[in-house]
Image (tube, one colour):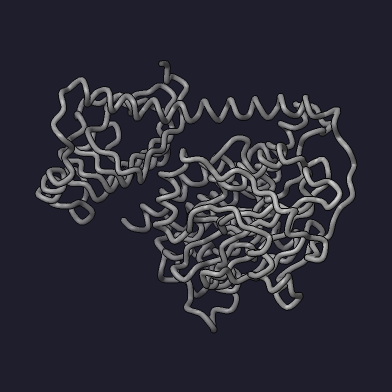
Length: 488
C-alpha cells in the first residue's frame, strides 16, 4: 500500500503499545503526526530521517527512552514538537519521567511474547486500519453524491408540522436502527468522559421528560423548531430539540441523517445522546418530526465567564488557552470527523458552553435535517459552498478568540475591523501595545510569545479574503505551539 500522499496521522489516546515505526517520520507528505497519550516503548533511532514538511509532531505521554531523533529534536518557527512526559534524555528533565518509570511501566503493560513477524504484522495492521478509515470516508462522500443524483427527480414540497404534542399518537413512533457495534471502542471512551451510550427514545419518554412539552420547559423557539429542557427517568437533565421535517424525508432518507447525527458525540461538543422519530398521521411510513436529545451543560456560556467575572472566578490565560483549543478541536471534529463534514455551524461566543471543569463545548452546531437531496446546485457549486462554509467557521472562530483575548464583546463589524487593525499594528510595533489590548484580568498570567502566537493566528482567521484564512489544522498547530511556549 502506498502512503506517499498521507498528510494527517492521528492515533493519540488509543492505548497503543509497542515500538514506533521510524518510517512514519519520513513519509514524504506527512505534516501532522500525533502519537501522544499511548504506551509506546523503546527508543527512536537517532539516524531516523524526517521529511521537511513536518508542521506538528507530538510523541508526548508515552514510555519512550533514549534521545529524540535529531530531525525532530525541538520546535522551530515552522514546526511544533511535543515530547514531554516520556523518559527522553535530550528533553528538559523538568518535563520527563526518570528512566525507571518507563522501564517499570513498560514491563507492566508488556504483551505476551510474540515472534518478530507477529509484532511487525501488528504495527502494519494498525497503520493500515488508520488509512482504511480515510478511504471509507472518501467512499461515503462518493455515495452521497450518487444519492443526490438519484433522488433529484423525487423532490416534493411538503407541509411543515409544528412540534405540538397533540399531533402525536402512540402508534406513530418509528425508531431508526441502533448504531452498530463498530462504534463500540469510541463509545467506551465517551462513557469514560461522562457521555452515556447513544440510544433511541420513545415518544412516551419525550412526553414524560418535558411534561408533555409544557411551555414552562421551553428554552428557545426558532424557525426550525423548539428546544425544551427535560428530565429523564434516570434523573439526568437533558435538552430535547424538536426538528420539523417535510414529507420527502422517508425513513430510508432519515436513516442516513441519523447515522451522521448519532456521531455528533465529542468532548468539545454538546453531544447528542439519542433521538426519537415520529410519523405523520396520514403517512405512517413517513417521518414528520425528530426529537434530538442533547446533554445539558450547567456552567453557563463562555461569554458569561468573560463578562460576568465578578460573579465567577476570573479565567486566566492558561485556562483561556485550554478553552480556545477545546473549541478548535470541536470544530476540527465537525469538519473532519466524518464524511461529508459539518460546516456552517453559526459559531458564537454565546454558543460556547463550559462544564464544571471549564471544558468548552460547542452548542447549536449544524443539526439541520434539510437534505441536500434534490438540490439544483451543481456539484461544483456544492463543493464551493462547503469551502465557503468551512472558512466562515474559521472566521467566526477568530471572532471568539478575539473576545477571549480582549475580554469584551464585539458588537459590530466596524468595531471588529478597528480592533483587528490595532492588533496588526501591535504585532508590527511594540510588545507594550499588544499588552495594552488584552483583558486586564489576564495580565501577568501569560508568556508574551504565547500571546503573540495566538494573536497572529487570530488575525489570520479574520482575513477578509476567505482563501487566505488558515485551515483548522493550521489553527491547532499554532495553538499547540503557544501552549508549549507558555509551559516552557
